[in-house]
Image (tube, rainbow, N blue to C red; front, side, top):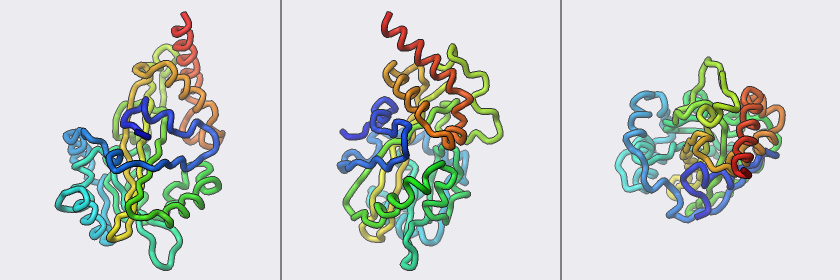
Length: 265
């Protein structure tokens, strides 16, 4: 399997802190979606936050096609409730050379709100990410335009966060308050997104899925903690500020050093 369904399996395939890159790899059909989803947790996420589902008229037909592909009746909301992955639909107008978000069911967001992104082109959706416009935007648009029905691609992404909540919307609270090298194993979490892309054959819409997995650093192997520490240190300044890395980096490095010393004792 090229991408697993857990933090330890996803970290080795993720960007290690340097320049942004697409990092996509081909997947088999049996590697597409989490085979054993926790549907009770999914239902609770959508019931608690109805605004997590945003639809447009343009998303109705692709949503029905997606549901049928998964052996379901209904549309995008039913598809997302029946699987672990959040799901986004994107299309391109004949007079445009970029894709827009036309529908989304995102129960486990990582610091973004669906209602703020609806109708936006990909570049505008990713505008807060430092370096996206310069390093990724053109390549992503080209990949999307060339993506053929039947092909399936995946990638992994990671964050260090201060909460184990699957819905990560920090709001106004102070991030990483009170995190130290001594408590980082319990207070810091590795959050991975398992992302996939495929084109729906009938409507031509592109489906983007996001499977979220979270583990406290204390439950990860020492080499995974070391990997994270090195990756965080390599994040460039602009993105470092956006992620609030300065607030927890000393604690992460101190904790990683302690774990390394434990391995050598």
